[in-house]
Length: 590
View 1 (tube, rainbow, N blue to C red):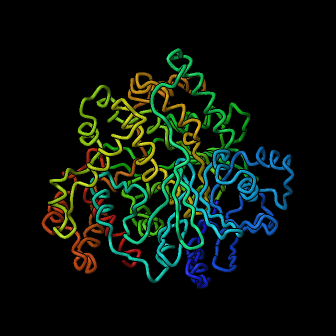
View 2 (cartoon, one colour):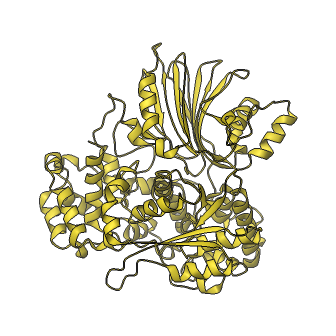
Protein backbone atom coordinates (compact mmCIF):
# COMPACT_ATOMS: atom_id res chain seq x y z
CA UNK A 1 0.00 0.00 0.00
CA UNK A 2 1.52 3.24 -1.09
CA UNK A 3 1.25 6.62 -2.71
CA UNK A 4 2.20 7.05 -6.35
CA UNK A 5 2.81 10.08 -8.56
CA UNK A 6 4.28 10.88 -11.92
CA UNK A 7 4.59 13.04 -14.99
CA UNK A 8 4.96 11.95 -18.62
CA UNK A 9 5.64 14.54 -21.32
CA UNK A 10 4.23 14.28 -24.84
CA UNK A 11 5.98 17.25 -26.47
CA UNK A 12 9.62 16.21 -26.20
CA UNK A 13 10.31 18.22 -23.05
CA UNK A 14 11.74 16.77 -19.87
CA UNK A 15 9.35 16.02 -17.01
CA UNK A 16 9.51 18.18 -13.90
CA UNK A 17 11.34 15.87 -11.49
CA UNK A 18 11.19 18.38 -8.64
CA UNK A 19 7.41 18.58 -9.01
CA UNK A 20 7.07 14.80 -8.96
CA UNK A 21 9.23 14.67 -5.83
CA UNK A 22 7.02 17.31 -4.18
CA UNK A 23 3.84 15.44 -5.13
CA UNK A 24 5.35 12.27 -3.71
CA UNK A 25 6.46 13.92 -0.48
CA UNK A 26 2.94 15.22 0.18
CA UNK A 27 1.76 11.59 0.32
CA UNK A 28 4.26 10.51 2.98
CA UNK A 29 1.50 9.32 5.36
CA UNK A 30 0.36 6.82 2.71
CA UNK A 31 3.84 5.33 2.61
CA UNK A 32 5.98 6.19 5.64
CA UNK A 33 8.53 3.40 5.11
CA UNK A 34 10.43 4.69 2.11
CA UNK A 35 10.42 6.75 -1.04
CA UNK A 36 11.82 6.73 -4.53
CA UNK A 37 11.90 8.74 -7.74
CA UNK A 38 12.74 7.31 -11.17
CA UNK A 39 13.32 9.53 -14.21
CA UNK A 40 14.22 8.55 -17.73
CA UNK A 41 13.53 10.39 -20.97
CA UNK A 42 10.00 11.70 -21.03
CA UNK A 43 8.87 10.16 -17.72
CA UNK A 44 9.36 10.72 -14.01
CA UNK A 45 7.73 8.46 -11.40
CA UNK A 46 7.54 8.91 -7.64
CA UNK A 47 6.58 6.47 -4.90
CA UNK A 48 6.00 6.36 -1.14
CA UNK A 49 6.13 2.86 0.34
CA UNK A 50 4.22 1.14 3.13
CA UNK A 51 5.93 -2.21 3.66
CA UNK A 52 3.37 -5.02 3.74
CA UNK A 53 4.62 -7.66 1.28
CA UNK A 54 8.34 -8.38 0.70
CA UNK A 55 9.77 -6.07 3.33
CA UNK A 56 13.18 -6.02 1.63
CA UNK A 57 14.59 -3.29 -0.60
CA UNK A 58 14.21 -5.62 -3.58
CA UNK A 59 10.53 -4.60 -3.73
CA UNK A 60 11.39 -0.89 -3.77
CA UNK A 61 9.49 1.35 -6.18
CA UNK A 62 9.41 2.83 -8.76
CA UNK A 63 10.28 -0.59 -10.13
CA UNK A 64 12.16 -0.81 -13.42
CA UNK A 65 12.71 -4.08 -15.25
CA UNK A 66 15.51 -3.37 -17.72
CA UNK A 67 15.21 -6.78 -19.36
CA UNK A 68 11.51 -6.32 -20.16
CA UNK A 69 11.69 -2.56 -20.73
CA UNK A 70 8.86 -1.91 -18.25
CA UNK A 71 8.57 0.54 -15.33
CA UNK A 72 5.78 0.72 -12.78
CA UNK A 73 4.52 2.62 -9.76
CA UNK A 74 1.83 0.64 -7.98
CA UNK A 75 -0.52 1.23 -5.05
CA UNK A 76 -2.49 -1.71 -3.66
CA UNK A 77 -2.18 -5.42 -3.09
CA UNK A 78 -2.54 -8.40 -5.43
CA UNK A 79 -3.80 -11.18 -3.19
CA UNK A 80 -3.18 -14.01 -5.64
CA UNK A 81 0.35 -12.92 -6.53
CA UNK A 82 1.97 -16.17 -5.31
CA UNK A 83 -0.16 -18.23 -7.71
CA UNK A 84 0.50 -15.81 -10.57
CA UNK A 85 4.22 -15.84 -9.83
CA UNK A 86 4.30 -19.65 -10.01
CA UNK A 87 2.45 -19.55 -13.33
CA UNK A 88 4.83 -16.95 -14.73
CA UNK A 89 7.88 -18.90 -13.56
CA UNK A 90 6.44 -21.83 -15.48
CA UNK A 91 6.50 -19.60 -18.56
CA UNK A 92 10.21 -18.91 -18.04
CA UNK A 93 10.15 -15.60 -16.18
CA UNK A 94 12.79 -14.96 -13.49
CA UNK A 95 12.18 -12.72 -10.47
CA UNK A 96 14.48 -10.42 -8.49
CA UNK A 97 11.97 -9.71 -5.68
CA UNK A 98 9.37 -11.62 -3.69
CA UNK A 99 6.43 -9.19 -3.81
CA UNK A 100 3.38 -8.46 -5.91
CA UNK A 101 4.72 -5.40 -7.79
CA UNK A 102 7.10 -7.40 -9.93
CA UNK A 103 4.37 -9.93 -10.63
CA UNK A 104 2.34 -7.17 -12.32
CA UNK A 105 5.32 -6.29 -14.52
CA UNK A 106 5.84 -9.88 -15.64
CA UNK A 107 2.10 -10.46 -16.07
CA UNK A 108 1.81 -7.38 -18.28
CA UNK A 109 4.70 -8.57 -20.42
CA UNK A 110 3.20 -12.06 -20.70
CA UNK A 111 -0.46 -11.21 -21.30
CA UNK A 112 -0.60 -7.48 -22.01
CA UNK A 113 -3.46 -5.36 -20.67
CA UNK A 114 -5.62 -8.49 -20.42
CA UNK A 115 -3.54 -9.44 -17.38
CA UNK A 116 -5.89 -7.30 -15.26
CA UNK A 117 -8.47 -10.09 -15.49
CA UNK A 118 -6.01 -12.31 -13.60
CA UNK A 119 -5.36 -9.80 -10.80
CA UNK A 120 -7.35 -10.47 -7.62
CA UNK A 121 -7.04 -7.49 -5.36
CA UNK A 122 -7.06 -3.72 -5.11
CA UNK A 123 -4.76 -1.73 -7.33
CA UNK A 124 -4.01 1.54 -9.04
CA UNK A 125 -0.86 1.80 -11.11
CA UNK A 126 0.90 3.50 -13.98
CA UNK A 127 2.96 1.22 -16.19
CA UNK A 128 5.40 2.51 -18.79
CA UNK A 129 6.42 0.49 -21.86
CA UNK A 130 9.85 1.70 -22.90
CA UNK A 131 9.52 0.08 -26.33
CA UNK A 132 6.82 2.14 -27.96
CA UNK A 133 6.87 4.85 -25.26
CA UNK A 134 3.38 3.94 -24.13
CA UNK A 135 1.85 4.61 -20.69
CA UNK A 136 -1.13 2.94 -19.03
CA UNK A 137 -3.19 4.12 -16.06
CA UNK A 138 -5.06 1.21 -14.45
CA UNK A 139 -7.57 1.03 -11.59
CA UNK A 140 -9.10 -2.02 -9.88
CA UNK A 141 -12.62 -3.28 -10.55
CA UNK A 142 -14.29 -1.60 -7.56
CA UNK A 143 -12.14 1.52 -7.34
CA UNK A 144 -10.76 0.59 -3.93
CA UNK A 145 -7.50 2.36 -4.68
CA UNK A 146 -7.65 5.97 -5.94
CA UNK A 147 -5.97 7.42 -9.01
CA UNK A 148 -6.21 11.11 -9.97
CA UNK A 149 -4.83 12.62 -13.15
CA UNK A 150 -4.56 15.68 -15.39
CA UNK A 151 -3.82 15.47 -19.09
CA UNK A 152 -3.38 18.08 -21.79
CA UNK A 153 -1.58 18.16 -25.11
CA UNK A 154 1.80 18.50 -23.43
CA UNK A 155 1.82 16.07 -20.49
CA UNK A 156 0.11 13.58 -18.22
CA UNK A 157 0.30 13.93 -14.46
CA UNK A 158 -1.12 11.46 -11.96
CA UNK A 159 -1.17 10.80 -8.20
CA UNK A 160 -2.89 8.79 -5.48
CA UNK A 161 -4.39 11.94 -3.98
CA UNK A 162 -6.00 15.06 -5.37
CA UNK A 163 -4.02 17.41 -3.08
CA UNK A 164 -0.81 16.02 -4.57
CA UNK A 165 -2.08 17.03 -8.00
CA UNK A 166 -2.50 20.60 -6.74
CA UNK A 167 1.26 20.87 -6.35
CA UNK A 168 1.36 21.58 -10.09
CA UNK A 169 1.21 25.35 -10.69
CA UNK A 170 -0.90 25.20 -13.85
CA UNK A 171 -3.89 23.12 -12.63
CA UNK A 172 -7.29 24.78 -13.06
CA UNK A 173 -8.50 24.96 -9.47
CA UNK A 174 -11.94 26.40 -10.20
CA UNK A 175 -14.95 24.36 -9.09
CA UNK A 176 -16.43 21.90 -11.56
CA UNK A 177 -20.10 23.00 -11.78
CA UNK A 178 -21.40 19.49 -12.50
CA UNK A 179 -19.41 18.04 -9.59
CA UNK A 180 -20.74 20.81 -7.36
CA UNK A 181 -24.32 19.80 -8.20
CA UNK A 182 -23.52 16.17 -7.42
CA UNK A 183 -21.91 17.13 -4.11
CA UNK A 184 -24.91 19.13 -2.92
CA UNK A 185 -27.64 16.91 -4.33
CA UNK A 186 -26.35 13.37 -4.93
CA UNK A 187 -25.32 12.86 -1.26
CA UNK A 188 -21.86 14.33 -1.87
CA UNK A 189 -21.06 11.59 -4.40
CA UNK A 190 -19.06 12.93 -7.35
CA UNK A 191 -18.88 10.14 -9.95
CA UNK A 192 -15.68 9.57 -11.91
CA UNK A 193 -14.13 10.99 -13.97
CA UNK A 194 -15.09 14.31 -12.36
CA UNK A 195 -13.79 15.76 -9.12
CA UNK A 196 -14.84 18.97 -7.39
CA UNK A 197 -11.78 20.61 -9.00
CA UNK A 198 -12.20 21.35 -12.70
CA UNK A 199 -8.58 20.62 -13.64
CA UNK A 200 -8.29 17.20 -11.95
CA UNK A 201 -9.97 13.99 -13.02
CA UNK A 202 -10.06 10.54 -11.43
CA UNK A 203 -9.81 7.27 -13.29
CA UNK A 204 -13.10 5.34 -13.20
CA UNK A 205 -13.00 1.88 -11.63
CA UNK A 206 -12.30 -1.13 -13.87
CA UNK A 207 -10.69 1.16 -16.42
CA UNK A 208 -7.45 1.33 -18.37
CA UNK A 209 -6.40 4.50 -20.16
CA UNK A 210 -3.50 3.96 -22.56
CA UNK A 211 -1.45 6.92 -23.80
CA UNK A 212 0.72 6.92 -26.91
CA UNK A 213 3.98 8.86 -27.02
CA UNK A 214 2.27 11.84 -28.65
CA UNK A 215 -0.54 11.98 -26.06
CA UNK A 216 -3.25 10.22 -28.03
CA UNK A 217 -5.26 8.01 -25.70
CA UNK A 218 -7.86 5.28 -25.60
CA UNK A 219 -9.99 4.21 -22.67
CA UNK A 220 -11.33 0.73 -21.93
CA UNK A 221 -13.67 -0.56 -19.24
CA UNK A 222 -12.51 -4.12 -18.58
CA UNK A 223 -15.11 -5.38 -16.06
CA UNK A 224 -18.78 -4.78 -15.34
CA UNK A 225 -21.01 -7.06 -13.24
CA UNK A 226 -24.34 -8.20 -14.67
CA UNK A 227 -27.32 -7.83 -12.35
CA UNK A 228 -30.07 -10.44 -12.31
CA UNK A 229 -30.22 -14.20 -12.73
CA UNK A 230 -27.70 -15.85 -15.02
CA UNK A 231 -28.28 -19.15 -16.91
CA UNK A 232 -28.82 -21.94 -14.38
CA UNK A 233 -29.49 -19.62 -11.44
CA UNK A 234 -33.24 -20.17 -11.63
CA UNK A 235 -32.68 -23.69 -10.26
CA UNK A 236 -31.00 -22.45 -7.09
CA UNK A 237 -32.88 -22.57 -3.78
CA UNK A 238 -32.52 -20.04 -0.97
CA UNK A 239 -30.28 -22.54 0.82
CA UNK A 240 -28.10 -22.80 -2.31
CA UNK A 241 -27.65 -19.03 -2.33
CA UNK A 242 -26.65 -19.12 1.34
CA UNK A 243 -24.08 -21.82 0.60
CA UNK A 244 -22.64 -19.81 -2.29
CA UNK A 245 -22.52 -16.63 -0.21
CA UNK A 246 -20.55 -18.28 2.59
CA UNK A 247 -18.22 -20.03 0.16
CA UNK A 248 -17.31 -16.86 -1.71
CA UNK A 249 -16.89 -14.90 1.53
CA UNK A 250 -14.59 -17.56 2.96
CA UNK A 251 -12.35 -17.23 -0.08
CA UNK A 252 -12.46 -13.44 0.13
CA UNK A 253 -11.33 -13.15 3.77
CA UNK A 254 -8.67 -15.83 3.37
CA UNK A 255 -7.24 -14.09 0.29
CA UNK A 256 -6.88 -10.92 2.32
CA UNK A 257 -4.60 -12.58 4.85
CA UNK A 258 -1.65 -12.51 2.42
CA UNK A 259 0.93 -10.25 4.10
CA UNK A 260 4.33 -10.33 5.73
CA UNK A 261 2.89 -8.48 8.74
CA UNK A 262 -0.08 -9.26 11.06
CA UNK A 263 -3.64 -8.55 9.82
CA UNK A 264 -6.34 -7.21 12.18
CA UNK A 265 -10.05 -6.34 11.80
CA UNK A 266 -12.05 -3.14 12.29
CA UNK A 267 -14.95 -4.51 14.34
CA UNK A 268 -17.95 -2.18 14.46
CA UNK A 269 -20.25 -4.70 16.09
CA UNK A 270 -22.45 -4.96 13.02
CA UNK A 271 -23.19 -8.04 10.95
CA UNK A 272 -20.61 -7.34 8.26
CA UNK A 273 -17.42 -6.89 10.28
CA UNK A 274 -18.58 -9.56 12.75
CA UNK A 275 -18.88 -12.07 9.94
CA UNK A 276 -15.36 -11.22 8.77
CA UNK A 277 -14.05 -11.97 12.27
CA UNK A 278 -16.04 -15.20 12.46
CA UNK A 279 -14.78 -16.43 9.09
CA UNK A 280 -11.19 -15.60 9.99
CA UNK A 281 -11.57 -17.54 13.25
CA UNK A 282 -13.11 -20.40 11.29
CA UNK A 283 -10.02 -20.31 9.03
CA UNK A 284 -7.80 -20.84 12.07
CA UNK A 285 -6.78 -17.30 12.99
CA UNK A 286 -6.09 -17.11 16.74
CA UNK A 287 -5.50 -14.03 18.87
CA UNK A 288 -6.86 -11.85 16.06
CA UNK A 289 -6.51 -8.13 16.86
CA UNK A 290 -9.89 -6.36 16.65
CA UNK A 291 -10.67 -2.67 17.11
CA UNK A 292 -13.86 -0.73 17.93
CA UNK A 293 -14.48 2.97 18.49
CA UNK A 294 -17.09 4.96 20.42
CA UNK A 295 -18.08 8.61 20.83
CA UNK A 296 -20.07 10.59 23.36
CA UNK A 297 -23.85 10.29 23.08
CA UNK A 298 -26.07 13.23 22.18
CA UNK A 299 -29.50 13.11 23.84
CA UNK A 300 -30.82 9.58 23.31
CA UNK A 301 -28.55 8.80 20.35
CA UNK A 302 -25.73 6.51 21.40
CA UNK A 303 -22.24 7.11 20.13
CA UNK A 304 -20.93 3.54 20.38
CA UNK A 305 -21.87 -0.06 19.66
CA UNK A 306 -19.52 -1.70 22.14
CA UNK A 307 -22.22 -4.04 23.46
CA UNK A 308 -22.24 -5.85 20.11
CA UNK A 309 -18.52 -5.76 19.36
CA UNK A 310 -17.97 -7.24 22.84
CA UNK A 311 -20.15 -10.23 21.93
CA UNK A 312 -17.96 -11.04 18.93
CA UNK A 313 -14.69 -10.37 20.73
CA UNK A 314 -15.68 -12.74 23.53
CA UNK A 315 -17.13 -15.40 21.21
CA UNK A 316 -13.98 -15.64 19.12
CA UNK A 317 -11.43 -14.74 21.82
CA UNK A 318 -9.95 -11.85 19.87
CA UNK A 319 -7.36 -9.45 21.20
CA UNK A 320 -9.91 -6.66 21.39
CA UNK A 321 -9.26 -2.93 21.70
CA UNK A 322 -12.10 -0.52 22.59
CA UNK A 323 -11.27 3.08 21.79
CA UNK A 324 -13.45 5.84 23.26
CA UNK A 325 -13.13 9.36 21.85
CA UNK A 326 -14.38 12.32 23.88
CA UNK A 327 -16.06 15.24 22.15
CA UNK A 328 -13.17 17.64 22.68
CA UNK A 329 -10.79 15.42 20.72
CA UNK A 330 -13.30 15.00 17.92
CA UNK A 331 -13.44 18.76 17.53
CA UNK A 332 -9.71 19.40 17.85
CA UNK A 333 -8.85 16.77 15.23
CA UNK A 334 -11.38 17.96 12.64
CA UNK A 335 -8.83 20.16 10.79
CA UNK A 336 -6.46 17.21 10.41
CA UNK A 337 -9.29 14.96 9.30
CA UNK A 338 -10.36 17.45 6.62
CA UNK A 339 -6.75 17.80 5.50
CA UNK A 340 -6.60 14.02 5.01
CA UNK A 341 -9.50 14.08 2.51
CA UNK A 342 -8.54 13.83 -1.12
CA UNK A 343 -11.98 15.18 -1.95
CA UNK A 344 -14.66 16.74 0.28
CA UNK A 345 -16.39 13.87 2.12
CA UNK A 346 -19.38 14.87 4.20
CA UNK A 347 -19.99 11.61 6.06
CA UNK A 348 -19.77 11.80 9.85
CA UNK A 349 -17.86 8.52 9.62
CA UNK A 350 -14.75 10.30 8.38
CA UNK A 351 -13.65 11.61 11.77
CA UNK A 352 -14.46 8.23 13.28
CA UNK A 353 -12.30 6.35 10.82
CA UNK A 354 -9.57 8.96 11.11
CA UNK A 355 -9.30 8.67 14.89
CA UNK A 356 -9.78 4.90 14.86
CA UNK A 357 -7.02 4.51 12.27
CA UNK A 358 -4.63 6.57 14.37
CA UNK A 359 -5.04 4.14 17.26
CA UNK A 360 -5.12 0.97 15.16
CA UNK A 361 -1.91 1.92 13.36
CA UNK A 362 -0.11 1.72 16.71
CA UNK A 363 -0.82 -2.02 16.76
CA UNK A 364 -1.07 -3.35 13.18
CA UNK A 365 -0.45 -2.18 9.63
CA UNK A 366 -3.20 -4.14 7.87
CA UNK A 367 -6.87 -4.55 8.74
CA UNK A 368 -9.90 -6.11 7.14
CA UNK A 369 -13.10 -4.09 7.19
CA UNK A 370 -16.80 -4.73 6.52
CA UNK A 371 -17.52 -1.94 4.03
CA UNK A 372 -19.58 -2.75 0.96
CA UNK A 373 -22.06 -5.33 2.26
CA UNK A 374 -24.99 -2.88 2.45
CA UNK A 375 -24.55 -1.80 -1.15
CA UNK A 376 -24.15 -5.24 -2.71
CA UNK A 377 -26.62 -7.19 -0.50
CA UNK A 378 -29.33 -4.47 -0.33
CA UNK A 379 -28.94 -3.42 3.28
CA UNK A 380 -30.28 0.14 3.00
CA UNK A 381 -33.81 1.38 3.57
CA UNK A 382 -34.26 2.73 0.03
CA UNK A 383 -34.10 -0.72 -1.60
CA UNK A 384 -37.50 -2.17 -0.56
CA UNK A 385 -39.46 0.70 -2.20
CA UNK A 386 -37.60 -0.10 -5.43
CA UNK A 387 -39.14 -3.58 -5.57
CA UNK A 388 -41.56 -3.46 -8.49
CA UNK A 389 -41.47 0.33 -8.68
CA UNK A 390 -42.72 1.83 -11.94
CA UNK A 391 -40.77 5.02 -11.16
CA UNK A 392 -37.30 3.87 -10.14
CA UNK A 393 -35.74 7.31 -10.50
CA UNK A 394 -38.42 8.94 -8.37
CA UNK A 395 -38.22 6.27 -5.66
CA UNK A 396 -34.44 6.38 -5.56
CA UNK A 397 -34.29 10.14 -5.57
CA UNK A 398 -36.80 10.52 -2.75
CA UNK A 399 -34.74 8.24 -0.49
CA UNK A 400 -31.16 9.11 -1.43
CA UNK A 401 -30.87 12.68 -2.72
CA UNK A 402 -30.06 15.37 -0.15
CA UNK A 403 -31.91 18.10 -2.07
CA UNK A 404 -34.18 18.39 -5.06
CA UNK A 405 -33.30 20.80 -7.84
CA UNK A 406 -35.65 23.49 -6.53
CA UNK A 407 -33.74 23.61 -3.26
CA UNK A 408 -30.47 23.72 -5.19
CA UNK A 409 -31.62 27.09 -6.54
CA UNK A 410 -32.06 28.22 -2.95
CA UNK A 411 -28.57 27.01 -1.94
CA UNK A 412 -26.34 28.26 -4.74
CA UNK A 413 -25.63 31.66 -6.11
CA UNK A 414 -27.11 31.87 -9.61
CA UNK A 415 -23.61 31.84 -11.14
CA UNK A 416 -23.11 28.26 -9.98
CA UNK A 417 -26.55 26.80 -10.69
CA UNK A 418 -27.04 24.85 -13.90
CA UNK A 419 -29.32 22.04 -14.96
CA UNK A 420 -30.40 19.05 -12.88
CA UNK A 421 -27.09 17.24 -13.38
CA UNK A 422 -27.60 14.64 -10.65
CA UNK A 423 -31.07 13.63 -11.80
CA UNK A 424 -29.82 13.35 -15.37
CA UNK A 425 -26.87 11.22 -14.28
CA UNK A 426 -29.01 8.71 -12.39
CA UNK A 427 -31.52 8.60 -15.26
CA UNK A 428 -28.75 7.74 -17.75
CA UNK A 429 -27.25 5.11 -15.45
CA UNK A 430 -30.64 3.46 -14.88
CA UNK A 431 -31.15 3.32 -18.67
CA UNK A 432 -27.99 1.28 -19.30
CA UNK A 433 -28.50 -2.38 -20.23
CA UNK A 434 -27.61 -5.15 -17.77
CA UNK A 435 -30.06 -4.41 -14.95
CA UNK A 436 -33.73 -4.80 -15.85
CA UNK A 437 -35.53 -4.60 -12.48
CA UNK A 438 -35.82 -1.26 -10.69
CA UNK A 439 -34.05 -2.55 -7.61
CA UNK A 440 -31.20 -3.95 -9.70
CA UNK A 441 -30.78 -0.55 -11.32
CA UNK A 442 -30.39 0.98 -7.85
CA UNK A 443 -28.03 -1.75 -6.64
CA UNK A 444 -25.87 -1.39 -9.75
CA UNK A 445 -25.69 2.40 -9.33
CA UNK A 446 -24.75 2.08 -5.67
CA UNK A 447 -22.18 -0.66 -6.32
CA UNK A 448 -20.43 1.06 -9.21
CA UNK A 449 -20.85 4.72 -8.22
CA UNK A 450 -21.99 5.54 -4.66
CA UNK A 451 -19.99 2.83 -2.93
CA UNK A 452 -16.77 3.88 -4.63
CA UNK A 453 -17.06 7.61 -4.04
CA UNK A 454 -18.41 7.50 -0.52
CA UNK A 455 -17.54 4.62 1.86
CA UNK A 456 -14.64 3.15 -0.14
CA UNK A 457 -12.93 6.51 -0.64
CA UNK A 458 -13.57 7.39 3.01
CA UNK A 459 -11.93 4.22 4.28
CA UNK A 460 -8.92 4.61 1.98
CA UNK A 461 -8.29 8.25 2.88
CA UNK A 462 -8.75 7.94 6.62
CA UNK A 463 -6.76 4.74 7.08
CA UNK A 464 -3.92 5.79 4.77
CA UNK A 465 -3.62 9.07 6.67
CA UNK A 466 -1.94 6.89 9.31
CA UNK A 467 -0.14 4.40 7.08
CA UNK A 468 -2.77 1.73 7.68
CA UNK A 469 -3.86 -0.60 4.88
CA UNK A 470 -7.57 -1.48 4.83
CA UNK A 471 -8.78 -4.55 2.94
CA UNK A 472 -12.47 -5.01 2.10
CA UNK A 473 -13.48 -8.64 1.50
CA UNK A 474 -17.08 -7.76 0.59
CA UNK A 475 -15.60 -5.99 -2.44
CA UNK A 476 -13.80 -9.04 -3.70
CA UNK A 477 -15.04 -9.00 -7.30
CA UNK A 478 -16.27 -12.58 -7.02
CA UNK A 479 -18.42 -11.60 -4.01
CA UNK A 480 -19.83 -8.64 -5.95
CA UNK A 481 -20.57 -10.81 -8.99
CA UNK A 482 -22.41 -13.35 -6.85
CA UNK A 483 -24.40 -10.71 -4.95
CA UNK A 484 -25.50 -9.18 -8.26
CA UNK A 485 -27.04 -12.54 -9.25
CA UNK A 486 -28.88 -13.23 -5.97
CA UNK A 487 -32.61 -12.56 -6.50
CA UNK A 488 -33.83 -9.40 -4.79
CA UNK A 489 -36.47 -11.40 -2.91
CA UNK A 490 -33.60 -13.03 -1.02
CA UNK A 491 -31.88 -9.72 -0.24
CA UNK A 492 -34.45 -7.13 0.84
CA UNK A 493 -36.53 -8.99 3.51
CA UNK A 494 -35.92 -8.62 7.25
CA UNK A 495 -34.39 -5.15 6.92
CA UNK A 496 -32.11 -6.13 4.03
CA UNK A 497 -29.09 -8.42 3.53
CA UNK A 498 -31.44 -11.34 4.20
CA UNK A 499 -29.37 -14.02 2.44
CA UNK A 500 -26.21 -12.76 4.16
CA UNK A 501 -27.88 -12.75 7.57
CA UNK A 502 -29.22 -16.27 7.22
CA UNK A 503 -25.88 -17.57 5.96
CA UNK A 504 -24.08 -15.79 8.81
CA UNK A 505 -26.14 -17.68 11.43
CA UNK A 506 -23.85 -20.64 10.75
CA UNK A 507 -20.84 -18.59 11.86
CA UNK A 508 -21.68 -15.80 14.33
CA UNK A 509 -24.12 -15.32 17.27
CA UNK A 510 -27.72 -14.46 16.43
CA UNK A 511 -27.66 -11.52 18.86
CA UNK A 512 -25.45 -9.59 16.47
CA UNK A 513 -27.45 -10.58 13.40
CA UNK A 514 -30.90 -9.69 14.80
CA UNK A 515 -29.92 -6.41 16.44
CA UNK A 516 -31.35 -3.08 15.16
CA UNK A 517 -29.41 -1.77 12.19
CA UNK A 518 -26.70 0.64 13.29
CA UNK A 519 -24.11 2.83 11.66
CA UNK A 520 -20.82 4.44 12.63
CA UNK A 521 -22.30 7.16 14.88
CA UNK A 522 -20.73 10.56 15.46
CA UNK A 523 -23.73 12.44 16.88
CA UNK A 524 -21.88 15.72 17.44
CA UNK A 525 -21.52 16.29 13.68
CA UNK A 526 -25.18 15.58 13.08
CA UNK A 527 -26.66 17.94 15.65
CA UNK A 528 -23.98 20.70 15.62
CA UNK A 529 -24.31 22.28 19.02
CA UNK A 530 -22.04 24.45 21.15
CA UNK A 531 -18.41 24.55 19.99
CA UNK A 532 -19.24 22.47 16.90
CA UNK A 533 -21.80 25.03 15.76
CA UNK A 534 -19.32 27.80 16.46
CA UNK A 535 -16.72 26.06 14.30
CA UNK A 536 -19.26 25.82 11.51
CA UNK A 537 -20.15 29.48 11.83
CA UNK A 538 -16.47 30.45 11.75
CA UNK A 539 -15.90 28.51 8.53
CA UNK A 540 -18.97 29.80 6.71
CA UNK A 541 -18.43 33.43 7.73
CA UNK A 542 -14.69 33.42 7.11
CA UNK A 543 -13.45 36.12 4.73
CA UNK A 544 -12.53 33.47 2.16
CA UNK A 545 -16.06 32.06 2.22
CA UNK A 546 -17.59 35.51 1.82
CA UNK A 547 -15.31 36.34 -1.09
CA UNK A 548 -16.02 33.00 -2.75
CA UNK A 549 -19.75 33.71 -2.62
CA UNK A 550 -20.63 30.11 -3.32
CA UNK A 551 -23.76 29.83 -1.18
CA UNK A 552 -26.69 32.20 -0.87
CA UNK A 553 -26.28 34.04 2.48
CA UNK A 554 -30.00 33.76 3.29
CA UNK A 555 -29.87 29.97 2.97
CA UNK A 556 -26.77 29.75 5.16
CA UNK A 557 -28.40 31.88 7.83
CA UNK A 558 -31.52 29.71 7.77
CA UNK A 559 -29.43 26.61 8.46
CA UNK A 560 -27.33 28.31 11.12
CA UNK A 561 -30.47 29.47 12.92
CA UNK A 562 -31.78 25.91 13.41
CA UNK A 563 -29.32 23.20 12.25
CA UNK A 564 -31.33 20.30 13.64
CA UNK A 565 -34.35 21.22 11.53
CA UNK A 566 -32.40 20.60 8.33
CA UNK A 567 -31.44 16.92 8.17
CA UNK A 568 -31.15 15.01 4.88
CA UNK A 569 -33.15 11.82 4.14
CA UNK A 570 -29.98 9.88 4.97
CA UNK A 571 -29.73 11.49 8.44
CA UNK A 572 -26.97 13.93 7.62
CA UNK A 573 -26.74 17.63 8.45
CA UNK A 574 -27.33 19.96 5.52
CA UNK A 575 -25.38 22.61 7.38
CA UNK A 576 -22.39 20.32 7.87
CA UNK A 577 -22.45 19.47 4.17
CA UNK A 578 -22.04 23.13 3.19
CA UNK A 579 -19.45 23.64 5.89
CA UNK A 580 -17.34 20.66 4.90
CA UNK A 581 -17.00 21.82 1.30
CA UNK A 582 -15.95 25.30 2.33
CA UNK A 583 -13.69 23.88 5.08
CA UNK A 584 -11.95 21.62 2.53
CA UNK A 585 -11.42 24.46 0.06
CA UNK A 586 -9.93 26.65 2.77
CA UNK A 587 -7.72 23.80 4.01
CA UNK A 588 -6.35 23.31 0.51
CA UNK A 589 -5.71 27.05 0.10
CA UNK A 590 -8.23 27.35 -2.73
